[in-house]
Image (tube, rainbow, N blue to C red; front, side, top):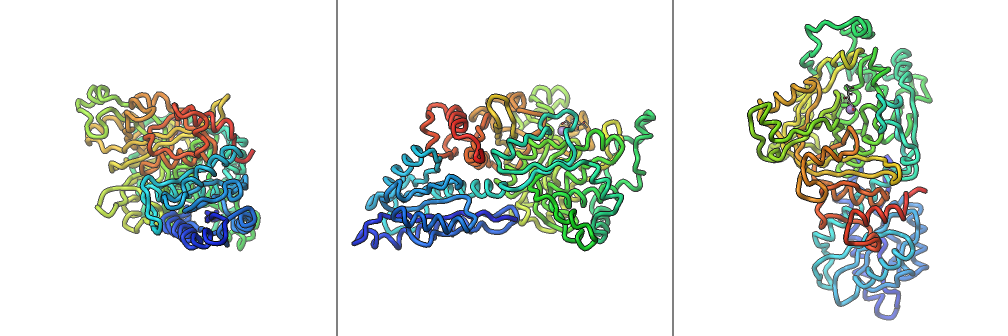
Length: 593
Ligand SMILES: C[C@H](O)[C@@H](O)[C@@H](O)C(=O)CO
Ligand SMILES: [Mn+2]
């Protein structure tokens, strides 16, 4: 995986003969402590620590700014963090590279005016059309202090995490396997959005490519054996909704793969889809050189419905296992992988995953259950997080198995973890919490197996959606809340009204903050049929990422004090932050115009 770096620029008062010499050490120490903070706390999605480089010299003026720029150009720097304890010359020391994302940390001491430089250089960035993040602690620190206060730490990490996310996406591909599923507009891939806002390539692969590779046996036969054995051992079959039903001939004659060969087909499908996205050197050994290369993916989706699923097993196993933090080889990096090839939801999964390192949940946003409706059908009251009503998140058969919340934190509570923190016991528990139900043949004539579980812990989560609105462009929705564990009888009554072969997550949005005035309105104002959900209250991280990409946030419930966007956005009006964001994003436009 590409490891885009954060570059630290220690800027300094350029006056030799006392001032500069006195500040060299403190300035460089700020750079070193910021670098340490970032590399010790942030990881790339592949689990490696985020890499940080520091300018070869402190920067007192344009000459040294150029030395730093030349060095960073060779070091794959995506975001620059300028640090200083003192006054420096604004336009002479600023980062003028239009291709890096910028922040400045001005030390809040008063012996030297680091914060005055910060203000001056923020004015310069605003005047020059280069949005930059301003970092300034709320409490005055002593002049010799090299420690970073908690508020500054959070801002540095929020900036660096999102900038790294921007760098990870850049030059990668979204791989559409198939095309538009059932007229879902989110599956009509918008190449301009991917290219201009995310710096990504779009790739199309016809679904027949999967069939070709199955029939010509273009996969690693050893890994296939291993994966199939793992499935037999770990993927138990669940409730069969078709049992005892009499189906019309149009359905019975459509199931092309015999029932006892369905798992074999599904496992080959999963191996092949992974290889299409990432390539596989083993294919080279088998003489399939082009296939071995893969498509430089970071995310993808499978159309499935309907032409494929009308006669072949659905891709629920593939979709679930691609998005999970493990597979037959043990723990592994999750891939944002969209059901129904809903690219816009695939991008929402990708944003959530880049913000957390955790497996993203793909769901239909299916039903708003008011407390009254729940009482009416179940005779029981909702309580706890669920008391104001809940939203039923349920996908048509696939979701990362991590969403069973069977992994345990250090206190023994169910949770979802960064994939590199999953233990063998966590993986076993997620497998045990999931059963694989034969697909509902009325929907999926070709069969397949749906991943069936329910999210069995009350976790903080954030639900995300990317929309495209003619007249605006891409927009983001971000709603924090909690997953809910309902009373068993209530769960059963509600769940069995839907499709009991599919994975269920009960979601209670946090209401009374920002745009989320009621649970009903979260459902009513959601931009599309799908949402992506990740563990943690990370709405603030998503808002920061969106501001870097110039995607305005249309609907969120992140508290104002947690919002961190470029300083120049304040110049677009401060009374209404949503309007400010819209105006600033419209003016600056996409990153890769
Ligand atoms: C099986 C059905 O066609 C589902 O796939 C459908 O309800 C959806 O998921 C629509 O997003
Ligand atoms: Mn769907």
